[in-house]
Amino acid sequence: MKEQIINKIKEYDTIIIHRHVRPDPDAFGSQGGLAKIIQETYPKKNVYVVGEDEETLSFLNTMDQISDEVYNGALVIVCDTANQERISDSRFHSGDFLIKIDHHPNEDPYGDITWVDTNASSTSEMIYELFSFGKQDGLKLSTEGARLLYAGIVGDTGRFLYPSATERTFAFASELIQFPFSRTELYEKMYETSPNLAKLQGYILQNFHFEGAGVAKVMINKKLLKEYGLRPQEASGLVSILGNIRGVKAWAFFVEEDTKIRVRLRSNGPIVNEVAKKYRGGGHPRAAGATIYSWDEVESVMDDLKQVVNAR
Image 1 (cartoon, rainbow, N blue to C red):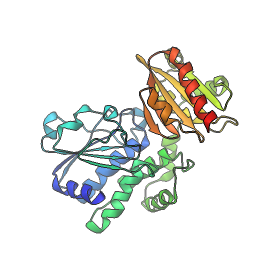
Image 2: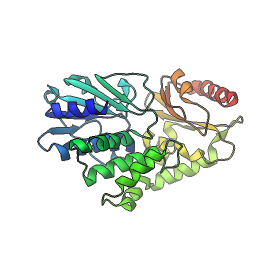
Image 3: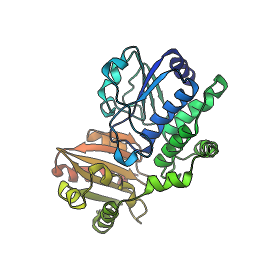
C-alpha cells in the first residue's frame, strides 16, 4: 500500500491534501507533514493543503486558497478523516485520483487507494511510516515536516499518555526529535490556555454530573459559551479533563453548536464508538464523536453509555 501511494505521488505534478473539519493537531500534522515531505522530495511539484483555517492551530500551519481548476488532473489525498462528510472542502472528489490515509475504523472506505491502520496512534505516525518506507526510494523530510508530524503524534496520544502510544510510536518520535525544532516552543503553543478557557475548565470541574455506574457528563450550551467568550471547538478541546477523576470510566461532553449539539465520548476502558454510531457518529473505540439535535436526546445517550460501562 505504501509503495502504491509513493508511486502515485511520483506520477502527479499537482497534489492537493485535505483533512477533516474542526481540525486537531493530528489533522494539521498529517496533512502538513505529508505536504512537506512531497515538497522537499519533489520541489517542482505543486502541492497544496486545503480546508478551513483554524486560529488556535495557526502556529502549525495555514491553508492554501486554490481555484476549482487546480483539481483538474490532480492527485487528491485525504488525511485523518474516516467519513467523507467530515472532509474539509467538498472538492476532494474533483481530482483525477483519490487516496485515503487514516487511523480510524474504516467505516467509509472511500478512495481509489485506502490505507487505514487502526493500530497507529495517529495519522501523523502513518505519514512518518510512509516516509521511513520511502527513504530508500529518495523521500526526504524537512525540519518543518518533522515538527508537524511530531505535533500530530503528541496531540493524538495525549503527550504519549494514551494506550494508543506503542513502541513504534515512541521509536518514530525518537527519530523525529533528532530534527532541530524546539519541542519546548511547540509544547507551549499546543497547550497554552487562554484565561477564558481556563475559567471554563474550572466551571466544568465544579459542575460536571457524575451519574453513577462510572459515567459522567458535561453540558455546555450556547449561553455558557457566550458567557465565557468561547467557540464550541475550544470548549470541546477540554473533553479529556474528566479522565483522571476517580470512578469515572466513561464520559460525554455535550457542546451546543448552531442547530446541533456535538457529543464527545471518551472512556478509560469501555468501548464507546458503538454508542457514537447510534447518534450519527463514530470514531475510535475509546474516543468517539456524535451529533444530536435536541437536549432531550442527552438522557438516551447517557443510558446507552451506562449500558456499555455495565456490560464491561
